[in-house]
Amino acid sequence: MLFEHGDNHYYVVWETSCTSGAPLLEWWYDDASRHSIEPWYRKIDDTHHRYTAIFGPVANISHVHYKVNNYRLSTKQYTIVRRGEAELNRVLVIADNQNGPTEFRKVLTGIQQYYGASSKPDTILHVGDAVQNVGSLSNWQRQLFAPMEDRSGLHHTTPTIFVPGNHDHDKRRVSSNRNLYMDMYHGLYDTDELGKAAVTNGSYHRFFHSLSVGSARIIVLDAECASKEESEFLERELKSLAFQSARFRIVAVHIPPYIEFWDPYGWNKKNEKHWGEHIRLEYDPLFRKHNVDLVISGHQHNYQRSTVSHSTNSARLGTITYAIVGGAGGMLDLERVEDWNMYNVTYLNHHFVALDIKDRSLSWTAVSSTGSVIDHFAVQR
Image (cartoon, rainbow, N blue to C red; front, side, top):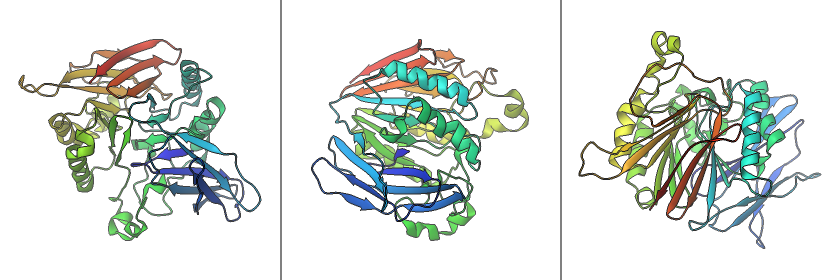
């Protein structure tokens, strides 16, 4: 599976049924010399051996190729297509497929039909909760990998920008942590950081990052592990030239600032209403202050979208859109627990979103698993 993390960096995760002798990931540009990366190895069990290789920075050119070799065998060549700002960048947005492989396959079938046989998204933005239990091998196989392989195969050539959800975490940042396939985030670029005390006490994390997709700048946040480090990162990124000069400014965070549908018992009796309060109380004022255009979340298993003014001050122009896209397969949230009196659209069924970005244009189309358009808006700059 192919992931994009930070500007111009990719990592590839693959698995074998036995240890693979001296495997290497090769990557290269058209008509250019090849680079070889030795992967990081982790044994899942006797028949599942996982390898992770990180490569980059990748130059801003249109194609990057990669394959995996060992001394006997090689995978086929895979190609990552990279688009410029003036080109159409097609982003597939999904979230919360966990524990719902049957419905996830229906969503993936709808995605195939939407894009057609001759086209595909350039990037997948997965807004969290890919599996129910990160320590369960069968969850990873049944809930994510098998449906992706069976219905699309997109995960080989379409990079996934992964936004961590509450089900995607093992907060113990140690090499033996229970997260079987997403533990590579710790020490992503600087292995010396694994020596920090914060690694063993669970407060250290590197899920948050930022990157550009065409003319949009996207900040990815970790909703589950609030920290001083992440708050400082967010303020720094919001003020950065890369973010402020982008045509479109986007934040992706799993838990929405404003939740309306949930299990009433968990919401009221188990204090689950407080899980994401820091996002609404601390982060959202910063989103508005720094003119974020679009906040994309999952967590709530249905679809909602709201577009409101950045400020109650009429002298400040601009709007911010909040979108909840938690409908890729998980059990739906159908009971209302709050009413923020702000959402323009509510759809209580499974869905995906096609986000198209091209130069001065952004187009957002939410589509049901059966192919019906349930919401659409566009922005011109």
